[in-house]
Amino acid sequence: MEKELFELYKSYTSDELIPNYELITGSGSNRSYYRIVGKKNSYIGVKGESLPENHAFISLAKHFKKKGLPVPEVYTVSNDEQFYLQEDLGKTSLFDIIQKRNKNDFSLQDKDILLKTIRLLPHIQYEGAEGLDFSICYPVSEFDKKTVFWDLNYFKYCFLKLSSIDFSEVELEKEFEKLAHNLLKEDNDTFMYRDFQSRNVMIKNGNPYFIDFQGGRKGPVYYDVASFVWQAKANFSKEERKELIDSYLSELQKFKTIDSNSFYKQLNHFVLFRTLQVLGVYGFRGYYEKKRHFLESISFALNNLQELLLSELTEYPYLAHLSKKLIEKQEINTIQEYKESSLTVTIYSFSYKKGIPEDTSGNGGGFVFDCRSIHNPGKYDEYKQLTGLDAPVQQFLENDGEIKPFLEHIFALADASVKKYIERDFTHLMFSFGCTGGQHRSVYSAQKLAEYLHQKFGVKIELIHQEQGIQTMLKNKNN
Image (cartoon, rainbow, N blue to C red; front, side):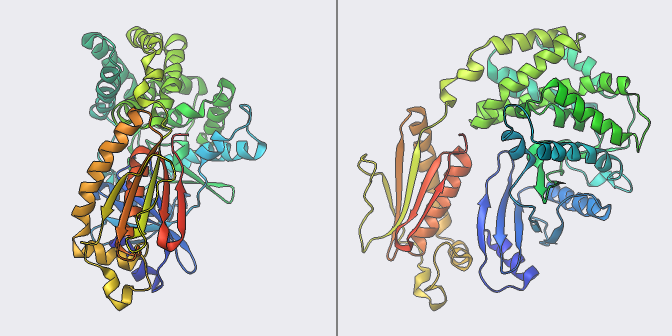
């Protein structure tokens, strides 16, 4: 855990005991999340690299909370707003509920949660906009033509070009202009969540709570409905989509008189726009960053795109032509480079006094790194009973300054090796970190490498702190 988060936790809780914590892995964020479990409560500790983005989230969360909207409470924030503690809403997201649906049917309880979620959306859009200073929004305060073309060009450069199909820039630009005009033809003063999808809805005591709204801005309500109802991997049926939209419209009538036919017609343009935008994300995260679950979503999104262009929005013939070519191109779903990896990475911490760990896979061992050149916390009384998993020891090592450059070189080497092992379909790779007692420096290093490789590649990690008798399995995120 980051030392600044540990200090923030201590100052907020006045708890001098070292808390348990775990890194919460994310899929597409530059923020680091930790679940911190103290003596009485648990918290989510956040480190965000972008200070303006952090400011947007913190400010919006406080504003929404005052409005009585179901969002996490922000408890305390560092002076520079890079670190903050927020309410822990548990481990169950709406995405988890959608993924476990049985034979395309939801249980009555799960259907109730789904409909509760969509009925809360108008409240965030209208009540959330009341008295909101939109200038705090990041990176822009309003949905306009400039931001429309940011997302359309994201689709063009991060999906179309990476998928290697031929297309006409001129014909594509004409339809982009037409789509932008249709999206912006209505005035609005509502809050557009922008990333309203099931991964950003947490379920606590049977009720939905909303997270990751820091990209929100002033904008049309249609965008969020399209994001939610047409999210690719939810794969809602036509009947389910209609039920969700009708539930939304029923609640929306409390804020504004709506003609449902007109709403559906305008919504279709936003479904098209949102589908193009998410394909851009899937292209970048999947084709470029090689994250499998984004690649798996592409076929769902393309099917949504083609169905829409052939049945509802025939005014975009060139996009319909491109969607047909994309679906026909087998590489989208079968590129061998991105096939599921069967690789297991085993990472040990050990004591040189007791010898280097044996490789039980039968492959003869792997990388072994000697941590004994690093300044040893074990020399000092206050650290002798602690390990490299404890925050004070981690603080000591990081503040001392020797271990970070040491690990940077190892991360680079591990990075290259894991990539090659995945490409060649190898099944096992081993790293071992040794120090004098196998307690401080080696434990810290093994833990950090495990977190790094799991976060970046999603492969199965077997982490063994030999002298501590601790064995942890980080599952393959792509299964």
